[in-house]
Length: 250
Image 1 (cartoon, rainbow, N blue to C red):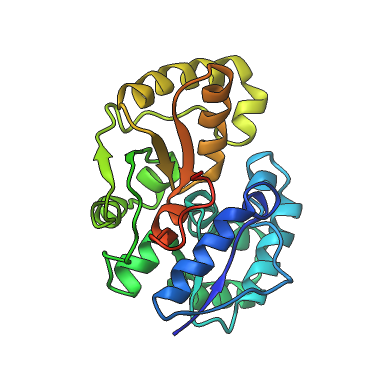
Image 2 (cartoon, rainbow, N blue to C red):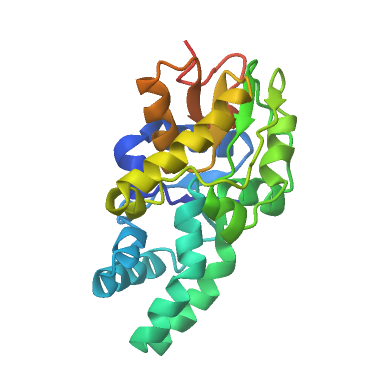
């Protein structure tokens, strides 16, 4: 099958290795991956900050860009949650019936990466090899909005060499929340402190997630504390093999 990779502006700008890993992974599974260069932002930052007109512009662009896509796959649960949760309200608010119809037709074909692998492709063992202790952070959007549930665990448990370390208080937010961490810096920092205690207590070498925004927040504090743990997006773990290890593994 053919899938369009929506890499998101955050990953494209700060974590290009996630996009490369997603492509390697999907192609290894026999998926023909395309990248539509006209993609920009999903509009989440604009919508959350109250800039409705700008958010609508981004949403309209995305819907039109992928109108004919067989499937749209994104390694970002927060961006997929934006599309599912906030686009309907945006289009309703602006009264564009044609765009609402286009969106309704597209929505069933938009997937977060783990959803696409488990639900659409029907695979759990993707042929990955990552011989490290790993703990999984369930981001708020993945946990509550998309309700990813066991999908990430099913994939991680089938990675050869990987020891999955349980994370206590899984439901706790890391405190990032995009613009929340900017507008409420002290609260965000306090939430991060509490979350990181649980993450470090897992005794893993790596903390993984399906959102690089959370991983950047956690990784920044780990670096400042000189913690003996690294962060890595799950796409990079799933793309890793014995002959082609993850880029962060040295």
